[in-house]
Image 1 (cartoon, rainbow, N blue to C red):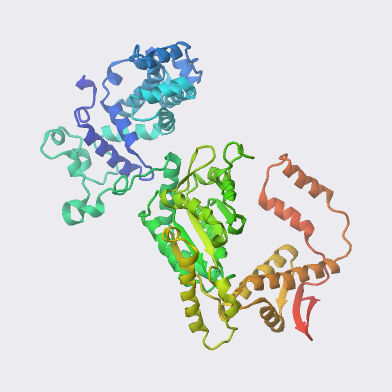
Image 2 (cartoon, helix red, strand yellow):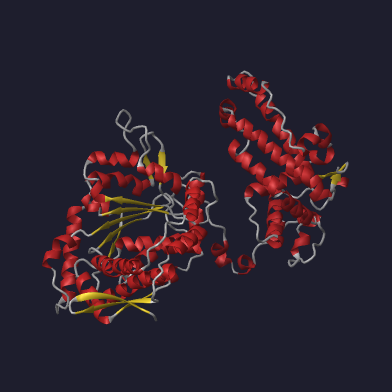
Length: 622
C-alpha cells in the first residue's frame, strides 16, 4: 500500500497535514480563504486509503454524472426513513445517505487522483470535470432530501455529520466550484521542492524525520514573532471564536452580516469619515466626533454583536440631527458600494398604546392581523445587510409604550412579531431624536447678537439635562449613548446657506444649463427671513426653496416659448419601463427625460436680487 503512495505524506498526523495545507494556501494562493471545513475535507481525502485501493469509478454510472442526469429519488427511501424514525432499524440512516455519499466519493477519488497521483483522466474522461460534476450532483441529491419534510427532520434528528443537511449542500457546491484550487493544493503538498518556495522548512515538513522526530512539523512553521519574542505571542495569536462571556445569538446570515460590517468598518478611515460629515453637517463637530468614536468599536471588532448601538440625538430644532443620519447613510453607501436599509418612525404617530401594533403586527383576532408589521417588513431587507438604520424621530412625543417596546431590541437585539417570529436587529443602528427641553425654552431665548449668548446656552444645556431625566425613564435613557447638538451660530448659518444654495445652483446647471447668481442684498434678506436662533436652519432651507428654487423655476417657464405636445415617444418609453417591458437603466432614463424637460429660454443665467423691498429675477446672456 505505501509503495503506491507518496511516503512523504503517508503517516503525517492530521493536525500536521492541516497546518501544512494552511501554510501552502497562504504561500501560493494568498488571495483565497481556506477555512477549517475545507482543511478537514482535504485531510480526509489525503488519508483515505480506500480512494487509492478501490476503483470507485466502476461502481457508478459516470455517464449520468457527466451529463447531469439525476437519478430519481427512490420511493423506498421514505419508507426507510419512516422505519428508522420509529427506532426499528436505526442503521437504515446509512441506506438513506448511501446514494449521495457514493457520488461524493467519486468526487473525492477524482480529487485524490488529480492532486496526489498526478492522473488527469480515466478512460478518456477528464477527472477535473468528473470531480466537479460529482460534487455538484451529490449536492443536488442532498438538496432533494432536504426538500422532503420527513427526510429533512430525520437528518436533523439523526445527524452523523458535523453539518446540517442544508449546510452540507452548500459545502458540496463549494467543493465543485473550488475543485481546481483543492487539486493544486494537493499537488504542492506532494511536491518535493515547489518552485518559488521562500521558506526552507517547507520541504522538511513532509520528510519522514519531521514526522518521527521530537519536534513536530507545525513548530517549524511558527511565526518568527512568536519564536523570537515570546512576550508578543498574544499579539499574533488567532482571535477567539467569540468574545469571552458573550454568547452570540444571531442566526447564520445575520452573523455573517455582522462580520461583514466589522470588515467594512475596519477598512474605513474613521477620521476621514468625520471630516466628510463635518463638511456637510455644519457646526456639530462634537456630535460627529462622538458618533465616530462609537464607529471605532465596530472597526476594532469589540462591539457586542448581540445588541444594536443605540443613540439619542438631542438638540434644538433645525440643527442637523436627522440630516446627520441621512448624510451618514449617503457617505457609507458610497464607500461600501451597498444599500443600507433605512426606516423612519415618526414619534407623534404613536400616541396611543395600540399604535404599537403597527410595528409588530396586529394580534391574532384583530383587524389586519394577517398582515405583517412595519418591523417585519423592514426585517426582510435588513436581516442580511451589514448595517441598517432605524430612526425614531421626536421620540418624546410618542406614547411611553413605544419606548418600552424598544427596550428588548436595545437589550437583546430581538423582538417577536404577531406571528411568533423572532426578528433580529442586532445589525441595526437605532437613533432617537428629540428637542426635549428646547421647545419649552424657546420662548425665553435671546435674539441673535445678545452679548451673553454663550452663557445662556450653558444654562439651557443644564435645563435640558434636567428635562431629559424628567420626561424619559431612566431604564430607557441608560441604554442610550446621548449625543448633544448645539445651537447654530451666524457663521454656521452662512456656511449652510452656501451649501444649500450650491445644490440649487447645481440642479439648474445640470437640468437647464443655466447659471444662477444671488446678489449680496438678496442673500442678506433671505438670511434675515429664514433664520432664528431657536429654529436653526430649517426655515432657511424653506426660504431658499421658495425665494430661489420656486421663483426661478416659475420665471424660466414663463419665459419659455409655448411648448409643443409632450414627446409621445419618450412618454411611451417610460410607460414601458413601468410595465417591465424594458430593462431599467436609471442614468439613461434620467438623461432622456431631462433632455426633454430642459428649458428653452433666450438667456444663459438668472440673477436674484433684492431692491426696494422686493426680490427681482433677471435673465442675462452671460
